[in-house]
Image (cartoon, rainbow, N blue to C red; front, top):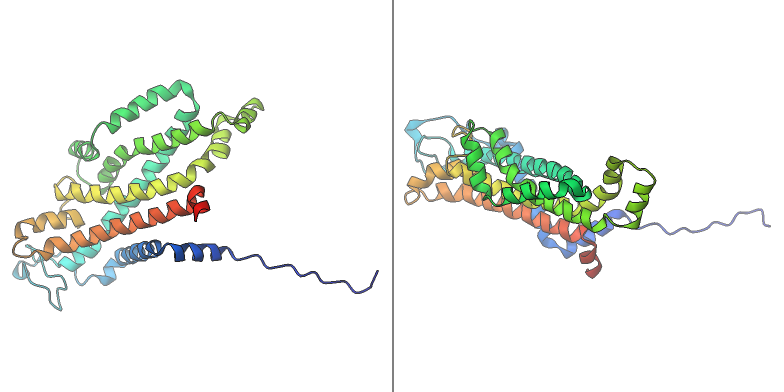
Length: 293
């Protein structure tokens, strides 16, 4: 046995980011979606520094002004800076979208796990979910908002409720597919508690599709909030959002079409960016699509 120890060359493991880089190269639309969404998020967070003036400051002497060095997008019928209002409006859309996605996902996940695993409550829970899905989402949201004072919190709750049944049905379907697996029966036979079974065995299987579903819920919530605000049933008029900006500019569409088109463009780009990110997450988290690629 030689005194000198032989060195064994161990190949370096490929960095984890190499797979992400390769995925982004194959899916340039995901890069576009992430870039657009990141730009909108940064602009919304930095609205106090990016906005030229206070978005709710009224100046009747400057009403319906054309774009200029002082007012980049012009002014509305009250003389408010349209550029500042559009930038601040992104905050409301993102807050509503992310809050609705988080609220609907958490509540739907809890109900779906219990409903799919416990046969005794499954029939009752699913009939309630079917009844909620029979009502159009925007009609249910309008009805809930009409029963209370308009606020951002009420809008979030009203938009999240119609999305919960969709999450429940998704999680329930996943639970039903793995409920009869041998390892679930073994865990039950050994006396493992129900919360531990749900969190350890069912939750990891439900998370990937739930993350993808949450992105689509977020995009849908942004659109519904804009529709509610456009109809006057969303956020209060003093709170700038893309929906009420377009609603206030509607009578002046022929005279100043950009007053309607600019917030509409920001709304469309935001929803497109969220959907592109959702499609990328679906391709990344779905093992069948990963094997094909």
